[in-house]
Length: 391
Ligand SMILES: [Fe+2]
Image 1 (spheres, rainbow, N blue to C red):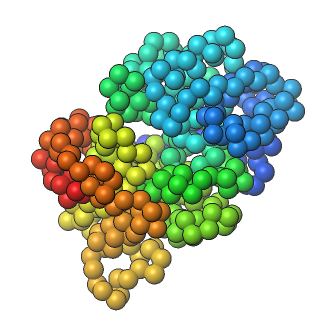
Image 2: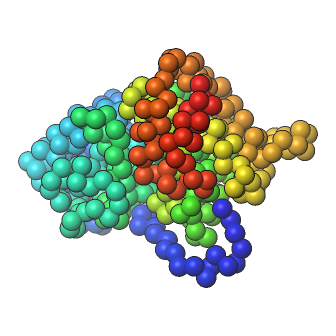
Image 3: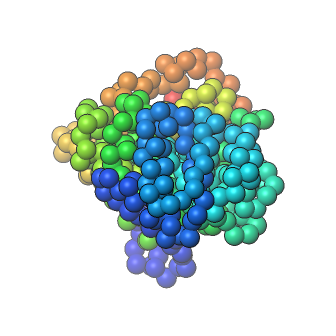
């Protein structure tokens, strides 16, 4: 939460490891940028949908123009698992790359980071849970996002699902951060509307949660704040017209700023609550976060009212003057409105979870590291209450 100048007398760090190359057509620079990092053999991780859309071919053509040898790993899906990463690592050991590219949505970027962990440091993905877990230097890597939302391009965590338990593991290390991220808006124009909705709501949750996180600092908040401004102003435009390139570009940059905010400030209870919904009920991450976020915002209202007041003022046509509703309620209703606009169910029961085992979900949520950064402390009982509120 924003606080006064006293906060500047407390020690903090700010990390921005990734060079951003932004603009339409910039994917054509992938080869030149890889070369500048000393690459001769480049492994590209792209999920099959991205390959089909032709984006991988555009990246491979740029790499070939720079005289670089390339190999593609595409045997993974929406939420890359430990098994996918192990298969990609086996492929990488044979191909022997000196640079890795994650070209696609969050799954492609996460898979690229996961392969980099195992190829560079050995062991299993489970060994790298948490932060600062790499055991040595890692290969340089480049992100080329084709969706706008996860923020994986600007933060050093790989989200990999444990194939045995179904739980998502956040595995991060500053050495896993991409050296370069190419933000080419033209690659995001082909996102199916459902993907744009799900990733966009995820990005909104990143801006909101990182802004009020207990780990937020005077250096992280400007990025959360600007991410929120870009997303609040432009996401409804993207939902209404997927061909609106200006709005798409704003959302793409907003998602990248939100990723940078996460890197420095972490997240909160909405992510802790969302992960068990994905693991146990297969709710896609962006939807799971969108279902829980409005309730978390209301829950947090008492401790971060001033921060929410500032954010609510950015909402398009913010009804503050008219109704005088508290900022938390205006933000929560706006997030729910995004779900409605994106034709997503807004309650657990409407999402098909008619008899949730709230106690088991809350116990799983309480074990999520990210919940510890929520501005208002959450325990299993508070988390159960939030699931109840979402029913
Ligand atoms: Fe997220």
